[in-house]
Length: 475
Image 1 (tube, rainbow, N blue to C red):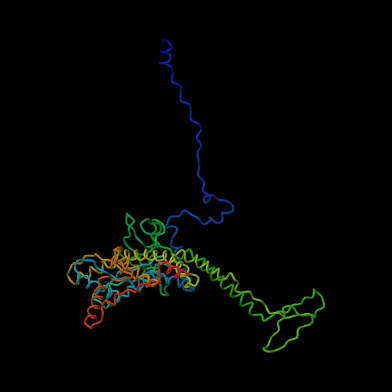
Image 2 (cartoon, one colour):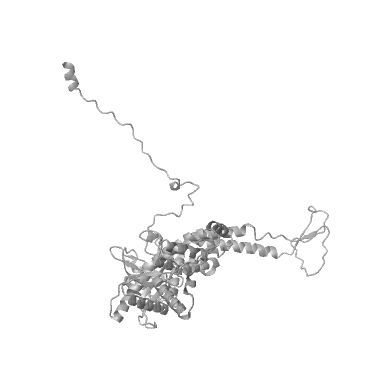
């Protein structure tokens, strides 16, 4: 009995203290500062996006990028190619309302207006400015000189003209000429009336405030909360300089070697049995002459050894690195596909074309849609009607290397119902409704002239099997 009571009222032993906990700290090699990497990471900082892209930094980058593009053939070609491939001959509008007659009239009038204001050309300039300046501005203004009923125009503005007054330094609601609301949305842009680099620049820096709905601002935001862009070719600027320096060094070495027709040398030791010759003396040579050398001396032609065998390889590698920050393959950047076969060329182009489609989608939503919204309002007011904004944009299609193979694949996709005529025509940058109407007119004319209309739609069947064709293409 006593044992049972003792067990009931026995004090519960205190819990054993847990073992000593060790604090585990993760380590990253890249976060360590050592004597070896101290200089490499010396320029790393924790600035905000806008502070890192300060007006002074962006000004220096713009000026250097413009200089490089203006003086470097590769840089100029890369920027031009990127603009031409992205914009092409311009975007084409297709309206998607229920009124077919209204759709065709809007498309026709917008196309005529685009040609009147040179919209494709201005879009290419905007794309080039985004690459070398980091950003592009365009104002929607009224221009009575436009030869069209709708006199809206797109006035391009260089990034240098959009800047803040010195009196607003330190304000949190303005970022270098862009005034923001409480939610971070642009409300207005301060645009100088004259470019800071003009010969008659206004020292008073008089400016106008452009409301945000009338201003189009495009740039690539590489960081959150970034309000002004930096040149897209910024990482490649030192590489462009290295490329030019290396080319000039090789040229200078080759020219220096070519300046010497030959050299005099002797196998005799110093103070040996050889006639005395003045060191570094020059002998003027004439054509078709026979010379006698001083005793103990011989003449030999200088072997320049320039350009070196690594010259072409160096240029290829540095151009490949330059083009990477712009998502360009090497053969596009260099304008040279001699080292490619069919398969590798198509594989490299897939990344490039995907980047082009991303750019086109961004331009369509940030530039073209805003232009169309203003244009449709003017169109509706002029005709006293209402127009729904349902639409889509078509861009130039990408040419296929093997048209016969692509046509055969296109036919198979249509027969298996895995695609549509709208999609297939859109891949070529064409409006399927307009193309089918044109095709119907062609068939009607063929029947009128007694021509076999069915022959025009026949697609030749390839004579080689797909596996054989792929092997031939890869060679």
